[in-house]
Length: 392
Image (cartoon, rainbow, N blue to C red):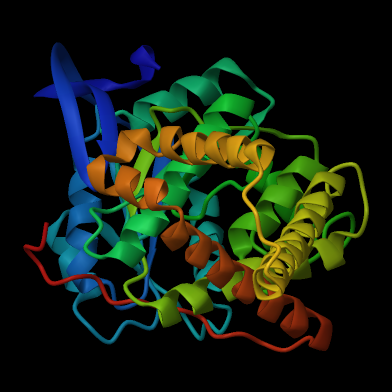
């Protein structure tokens, strides 16, 4: 990577942790380097993201390996998204008659890049801020392993401003720990991920045959969760995936229960739709098992609730030392797995009940997603406005 980068003048942040919506970095004497356009191009799909876009582009400019070419894909914007992009030195590509949302916008941009391709493509949501070492780390991983098709970001929630957002931050922290512990990438996240161009080209060539979708499309326009669908596509074609700790990114948290419900219904239904399209295979078996386990968890919680209520009503409820010990282990696990998010997250985990209520809300979203998937019913595309400028 060093031979392909031009030296800059600014000192670079080297070690980064991102928790609670804050970026903490230690600096080194290394100089920031720029990554030429024939090596990396960044695509930032945006629909009315003028308020959030500036922070995203600033984070790209502050990378230890800063990309020279950044394209903001303005999709039917009615605000100042394009002006903000140009003010930050990014190119603007406006979509034409796009009806396939983010997938369609990215497909149009990727078609335009065929005349000036780069080795790698980084896709970043317009409301996502990357850790300073994201690009440097992803490039190094892709350079080191020619069968690595993509490097996924590990997303963390922005600074929580409510109990609901803290619950989401706790969930994301546990997901991060799971990825780093198991080294398994379930989904190449749409918030921020870097792809090998050759892998994307192979996906496009396999559409309409080995893979679902239209021939020539990188993203399946019929998928409502294009990131999980592309993950299945890459795995089906035999590409490896990675998610290094250094590739952290901050993303939005849902401000209301209604927003959370709509977001998760879309996520769950998107995966269910994708699994229906791909069928049962070596790749999809684990994902199908995950969906079944969600159902088992729902049934188990319902059964425990009914039995507990029945025993209380019958006057036979008693606390067993065995189950008390099991409960203690459960509480300790919930507490330890959110320790890095800070005091507020730990208190919520220790209280138990708020996280149980949160889990029930997610299960309700899953149940609705199953109904919508079986009925082949469309779900709402959830777009949440960013918080006012200046809110920490």
